[in-house]
Amino acid sequence: MSKFIQAVSDYYELTKAGYYLGVAVILLLIFVTAAIIAKRQNVGKMTVKRIAFAGAALALAVITSFVKYELPMGGSVTLFSMFFVCLVGYTYGVSAGLTAAFAYGMFQFLQTGATYFLTPFQTCCDYFFAFTALGIAGFWYKKKNGLVIGYVVAALVRGLFHTLGGYIYWMDYMPDTFPKSLAVVYPIVYNYSYILIEMIITLVLINIPPVKKAINRLVTLVSNDDAGSGDISAQA
Image (cartoon, rainbow, N blue to C red; front, side):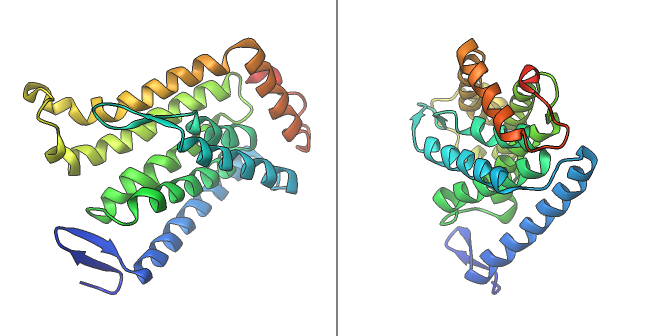
């Protein structure tokens, strides 16, 4: 088909050249967008401490993504993996948040999506757009209740991209047990079922007073190299 994409049976597969080109283009778009937004947020430079914290949070997100409960209809509820990605954005702003979220999306793609996909746009909806959306929690950087609001919005937007891909590409995979009269809402039910369950459980956990206090202390500790940042614990 081309040196970047090749047809295999009834689906498409990236060639090695296509894989590297796609990664390079998307990375460029993410970093340019993040840099523009970061200037408006007046976020400091990524210090060694920040990089270490972001790396640790991303590692926790990856590890906890393997600890999951598979729902009967499909989709899985993980052990708070979305939260760890959103935490980077809330702590260091949207630039760091989008970068970490994109890296997480890359891992998810390599783990489950790189060997099979329908079209490049479907891949973007299910992996790059959906998981990178978790980084928009960074828009609520240092804002009052920003961690909770940012997490909720990011999780809902992630579901929106999954749902879009579901309507365009996955309707034929609707199980026979799902009521045909409700077929129009199948992608919404399928995708938001596992996302909302994980979101609700996470929100309950992070609002338990001892847990909330621990998170606030952690965010304050890893943010104290910010010029004029002060104590932001009361804002989370």
